[in-house]
Image (cartoon, rainbow, N blue to C red):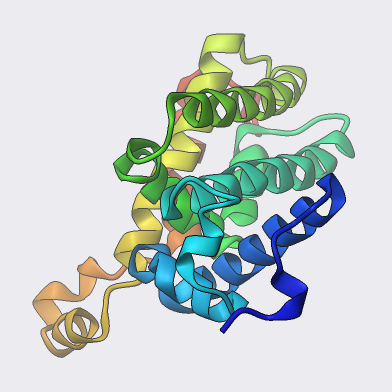
Length: 222
């Protein structure tokens, strides 16, 4: 079922194009189905090749999604820093809202944030994990610079704030998107209504409390 456009890449440019097509397919499927339910065969079918052809470009299904997670970090970081960078001052509540809103607006990234430590990092080479961690660290440092400038957070507290935001966003997204059977259960029994959460409001509340407790400027302190 191989298509002429997907013959084995013979140049660096062609290889990049093949990898981009694979990532595009995985991205689309991940958004539609959830990362956990997308298989290598699904991605291969969407691209139009046998799954063995994909392994010429990526080690495993997990490496494909880990690459998308790194991409998500770069895109989220750039958007958040552009927002924060336009501000000459901000309160803890305002920064919390910016963090929560920017993460909630990226559901695939939230899904990937939950999946990365659970399984994506566990079925790739050590070098792939190293590359991913270094890419993430770079973005954490850049975002931390803005948190330090606006809120006076030191490096440790900035890292803690970002880790809290991203790990909680991943967990809350999973809670907010149960499968059809679980959603029916939760909505049919009033006692279980709390099981389905809204990501942005809860994330905003938790981050606001953390940033205020970490000594960031409050509305009163200006």
